[in-house]
Length: 386
Figure 1: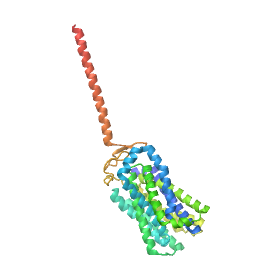
Figure 2 (figure 1 turned 180 degrees about the vertical axis):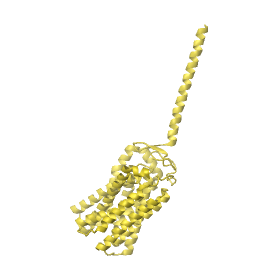
Figure 3 (figure 1 turned 90 degrees about the vertical axis):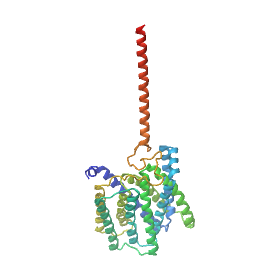
Figure 4 (figure 1 turned 120 degrees about the horizontal axis):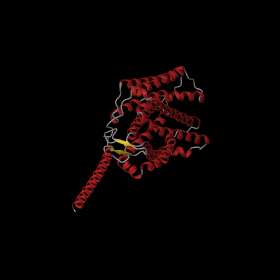
């Protein structure tokens, strides 16, 4: 606990990063609402397509430059199915959550969206071998309590809206929340083994393919009828830019904290959304919302005041059981590799081999010196006797 309290800079940094991602989610919700309400545009695959394209275009050249083509190809050849799965659940999570708002009520969406958090906790327990102390459980409960106050505030102020098809919308939201949990946990698992920029680059590559195919199948008719006004273009580009920032920050937050901490942090996005609503949609805000925000932030502090140790023995999953050049850790050992500044890593076995080579050269040099010394002594003795 003393170590955690002493490392206040790290705590402050992850708190700030967590709230930036929460603000990004709020901005995407506001922009999506603007598109749907003002421009009658509800095309989740179309809105997300450019995000994945940008991630690939920006981060793949960085990956190739820092790791080299050989390391990148060796990794994707062995673990391609991990990146395909990550992209698939991420694309479907975005799709089903956005579509759920079209069918079920706002209250149901807010309630069911919290399903992501317990899913992440359970998945982290099994996949990442994360272990939670009682203080962390208390922090999670405090954050969920704050979320409950937000929902109560919406009910009291009448900000809920009627459901068009509650069963369909609720199922969509549960599917989307589960996909988000799978996406967050899988991404944390990967970025604890590989550089963040490489993970985001492959997410962009496979996300572009999956999202593009789905967009062509589901939304091609609506896209052909879409009127490209400056508002539609502006809101869409704004949505894509904010999402790009979100996808850039999240892997660093996973590495510095965890997927659980990230999902606790973004619970404040509903509070930020209410602030936007007050000034953009003239909706009423009561004091209960401020109390909810304080309770959620307090829960985050309690959660991190005594963090669980970094997860160990994560690499027993298929594809990560053996070392691949560029890995940040040795299979089964969190501290089994020394990470270099360029994003590459050197395993303990490679370090041992280097040490052995240096010892061999040293022994060889010593032997040569000894031979030369013996020869000089023999030569010197012969000349004296003569």
